[in-house]
Length: 464
Image (tube, rainbow, N blue to C red; front, top):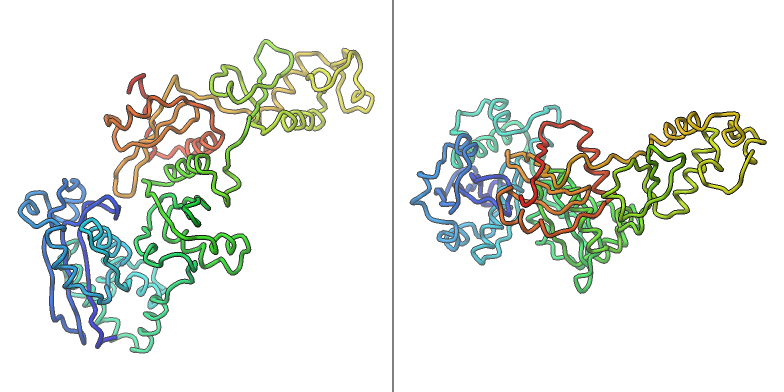
């Protein structure tokens, strides 16, 4: 590929989200036959503040970009300069994604083939664990570059490219490049350019069919990898094949992390009822067993009571029949009296006692207190954790770039997420009436059980 123009590219940005953050510096060097024949290097005014940790990393501060052109101001010129030459970058999806989004904001549809040197390094040297640019500079003994500034990193990539061509045959490199650039098998009705901006970040994705019908909602900690996996598996999985054949469009929503992705996925599935989602569809009329301390036997409560009940609750069931059958099985497993538990009618010695499946609380051979204690202990594995706060709580999830998103939950009901607890968005969520949601309950309990210090818990007062 030495005779084909390659644009080695690096961007500095205000963060890692291609749809939200902005470019602060561009370095694009056009290389033919191993020589740089043209360059496009400039600072860019992101028209927003540069976070302190990004300033520390790149050395680019607000003052340095205050007089620089905005991306919109240079978009037409840079668009023409790039043409349709192949982009070469380390973690190319990141840089290409930022370019695509910045050009789109300027009203330009930029598409080009891209080559990722990170992926290429992994294929050329699979025996090594680390393939970040610092590791590669050290491993290949490259000249010291100005790291985390766009042109310095771009020239490091070019030096790495030269080093690879000295160590490996041209045919080996060409074969790996061709393999990387082959396009995955995509749905016949899906525009391939819809996948070019897929980020390698956590989030939720939506597949649409004809007339914008929602087919499927999914989540992942790596949106790009998960979405593409649907298309690589469609010939080996009948369900995937049927789904992929119907896809006409795709959308995605990035989240700070896995918790936000899981909460949003569960919420969207209940709102949109996608035809290919099954596990997280809306549960109808959930019921649970309630057993107050002053009662000899439990009774069933419906979903509207799950959020407000002050008593211990056991199990979540889709119907009263499921709940009764579950308790009957527990009675059999633990030699409890179904009659005393209110599962069957009768007085005196029950039929199960004659079969030695009841220890005799019904006929005075076991005390009621002993029976109740054994029954409560047997039910503990089904016990629902009560909402431990008086009202709404903000769960602050920390992202990879040290940004924090707040997920607002009230009595196991996910209300939404906000970037700041002082925002108007938070006030807008106050109007929602909480309702117990089994999926939110399960998701949050998994995360709370981890005792992860990246999750900050902030109870909210009424009104904020």
